[in-house]
Image 1: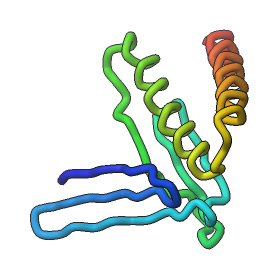
Image 2 (image 1 turned 120 degrees about the horizontal axis):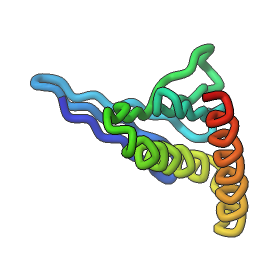
Image 3 (image 1 turned 90 degrees about the vertical axis):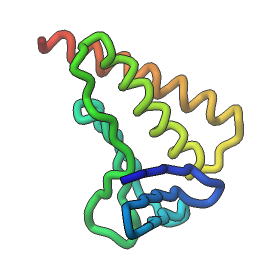
Image 4 (image 1 turned 30 degrees about the horizontal axis):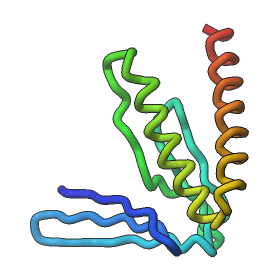
Length: 117
């Protein structure tokens, strides 16, 4: 199966192609209520105005090599940031400020995780 994820100007599109079927699922930004990133499972989920449950839209398989976990986290956060920024239709200044806040929050989460180990 071949899968593609596209962050467009007005919608997130998930496209999958199997041997005999092709499917696309659209998440129009005007209807996204929440975007959630799970760093433990390396996945991004969205909650739409018309749904009661989250739908996983992006996931990275957890690397077996512990040294590659940080790289996987950066990739998942990059997708999350791209989706949030696209759905909010932010200016470049607003994007920069939001990314700075998210980076600081991420550093705090990592510090808290390391204390519990």
